[in-house]
Amino acid sequence: MFTALRKIQKDKEPTEFEESVAQALFDLENTNPELKSDLKDLYINSAVQIDVSGNRKAVVIHVPYRLRKAYRKIHVRLVRELEKKFSGKDVVLVATRKIVRPPKKGSAVKRPRSRTLTSVHDNILEDLVQPAEIVGKRVRFRLDGSKIMKVFLDPKARNDTEYKLESFTGVYRKLCGKDVAFEYPATEA
Image: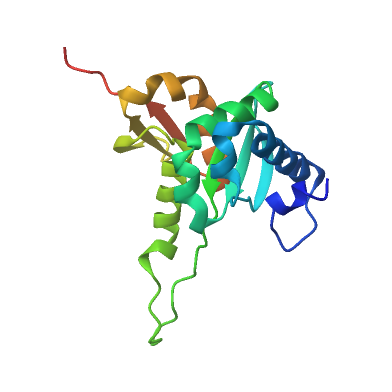
């Protein structure tokens, strides 16, 4: 288990579930020749298991922001292998991002646009639906005042993501506290 612990880097002691995810990544690195070179320098920050709906569960793996591009290169293969290891659970990779509070009045310090709440939530949404791309968003205001965001995904990636749409909705609600509905736009024939 000692060698698998280098696959998770965090300040606190990793939980039992995080250790199992780190062990799964370590096993993939050692047993899967096509992922070995890509996984060699990669690690995770944390992992959480979320109840999505009914008896479905999703595994949310937080990866360092700096390594997100390296994870995106192998995203489809890595998620497929991890879903085999955690049978019956949908695996989602999300980059760890930080929200900075707005500066005080009269302060000369400017906050980067990428650290705003809106920007972080939009980027989490993009990370969730990977490898599909978001082609449109609509915010619908209901009569009772509640909001629901409709997100339209690229129909080309329908095979990779269609079975996970329910998980995407549950994970986004848990991470950001917003209701979202995922759809594929009707194609004109």
